[in-house]
Amino acid sequence: MNKILFIAGNGLSIDLFQYLGSPYNPSSPFLFDVPHPLYGDKKLLDELTRVKEMIKAGSGKNDFVIIEDFINNYREDEEHLWRHGELRQYLSLAYAHANADLLARWRSGWRWEQWLNKNYSKLAGAVSFNYDLGLETTLSKLSLEYYRPGTPEEDTPKGIPIFKPHGSCDFDISNRAISMPLEARLKSLTRLNDAGIIEVVSKNKLSEPRTEADIVLPFEKSPQRHLRWIQRGEETIKKIAKTVDTCIIVGISYRSCDRQEIDSIINELPRDIKIELVTPTENKKFEKRLREISCKAEKIAPEIFLKE
Image (cartoon, rainbow, N blue to C red; front, side):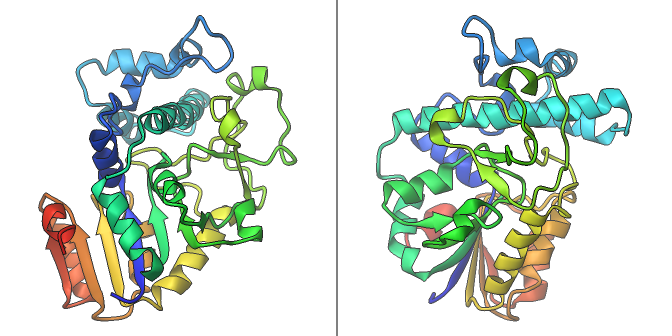
């Protein structure tokens, strides 16, 4: 491996949360018990009543299944637009809350931390479909640099680019594009405004409500690929994909809703490069798709891959 493209999904975050002994499961965001960002005696769900109603109606179902049911029955009416907005706001703040727990529990030794440290010099770029900052935090703790295309970090790029096509818990629309007081943000609906680049929320403000949380919901076909910050990130990664000799894919399920985005990247890979799908479970559709790109594509268990 001389030049690597690293693509990560929810499986990578789950592995990190489990390693650190966090009570938060990245697949169960409705159990995060997020405090209200403005009123200490309340919970976030006390404000986002539509999300709270969805959780109650879906009692007994997995959190992502509740969201999937919403996506499958989605209509472009006022009520569904508001539910969509509240879900995006909730997920942004919930994963920011969970990320604070990761920082409080941080200890070195995570197996993917060791792999990233060992292979950083070979990394040409990364794609993370995760809302949390697990990958970014790991690199920072190792004093390894990165920047996110489509954000102001791109103005002075250092280290490797990390493209986050489904959004991030530290992203928000620029205050210069839409200025809104904190008290109004949880009671307002903004969606898909194109301000050119996305702003990075400072660490000391991650618990504050977002003006516009550009989050792609689980099981949702991305509605935001036309936004310029997304296009800039995708363009950056596509150029890199053409130049690598290895692609490492971790924790990606290749759901039908995400295939167009994933295919747009892997289709740029040179033919017959080394592709390793690192997963403990079988994923026949994704394995078949990867073998169409390269005869050197293979599925490998994390325990075996990380011992190499």
